[in-house]
Amino acid sequence: MRLLEMSYTCAPVRDLASLYYMKPEIVAGRIKARKQLLGKTAPGKVFRHYRSADIVKAWYTKNKRKYPLLSFRIMAQYLGFTSHAAILQLFTGRMKISPMILPKYIKLMKLKGEEAHYFTMVVALERLRLDFTAQKAILQTWRKRRKG
Image (cartoon, rainbow, N blue to C red; front, side, top):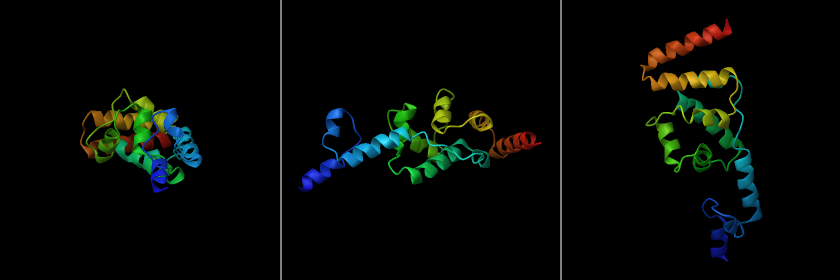
């Protein structure tokens, strides 16, 4: 009986045959997590951060509380990465968001209007390899102009 219970909590679902061995609640939970992966970012929360990794981290932690089945693997799969290591490297600062994948991140976090524009600006400034204080000053100037 113990072996059967362990097989229910197997690794990510690869095909329909593996769904047969899983408990219905787990299958439903995984399908729901994938459908709800596109969680909404609270308005204005994006503008608190000056680094793209911080914006993505804030989105991930907020949605991880809401949807416990959300994982780096699901997120990497949605973004088109072959491994979840890319997400970990983004969080640790070893990797930057590429302009080719930027639209997928925007869609993933459901950013619209000024939030999407701000996130795009943050990514572009990081790609320029500016000093963090210069990047922060540029973003603060943009935020002041936006308000005024």
